[in-house]
Image (spheres, rainbow, N blue to C red):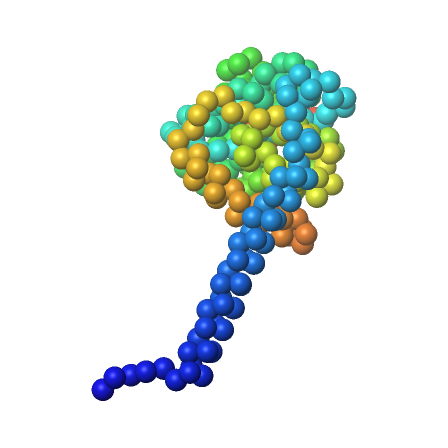
Length: 231
């Protein structure tokens, strides 16, 4: 027995397909549109190291965490740290805030980050650790609320800087960024695609401003970074 769709069913299916296609197109436009908006809002605040050195009254340089392997910074993180220390040596800010993931005893980004700076002769007291910087949003929220920063220079790779600066500004920080792209990175196309979705997510978070996983007592960035030591 041959089954045939009635004209009415065929017409309704066609309408459904058209509606689905329109919805998909609008969804894609929204995803990429928000990502583009975040980039456009932030791009003027991405500076060269020389431009950053001309800023006044910067409270700290924020180096955002990334993967460590057996307490050794990954190439991407190593580049962030290298640029962060160079900016410190250039007098961009008197303190460095290492913000990363130390949510488990067997995984610790921030102590590896601080040790990297100390090995390059940065005084320990000038290096703060944010052990609960579990995401870019949480790092920026805690920089303002816990470490009492007001004006910051953020260091990470360029693709990540747009979102970092945008979040910081939405949370009330005066934020600038210096890119740390010192080499080509494997999986960069994947990072670029994932970042589009991350910008959309953090755009929404920046509207509603949820509290981070942890807050706690204030640790002003103007003080001694050794108060954040846990070893």
